[in-house]
Image (tube, rainbow, N blue to C red; front, top):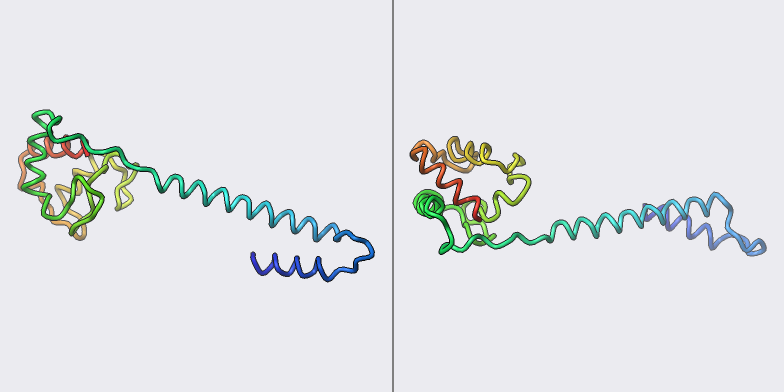
Length: 149
């Protein structure tokens, strides 16, 4: 695209100056390029704005209900070794902060209870299956806690 732009600019400046006007085809080409560059600029601004959105902070630990508090304890026993919960920094695995506040998980799966529970129960390529070592109540409480992040 940049090469075509330079070719058109060079052609424009190489034209005879007697008419004082570029041929219609050149003007049309320059308009198309200008529109394309404008669209590209708008797309870049939108992408930057969407990519820079901040996640709301996790619910403070002191404000968790009993189920969420128990989920936090399960998280500490089963997940904290590999996953951060209150920062965006990954450990051995991705950070879990805002896991349900995003539309998709890092795997590309929808960020919903079923997909997260599948990862916990069955594991992922770099994550062991840990759900089978939890009671159904522990799994439910862990999900309740993850929703607070």
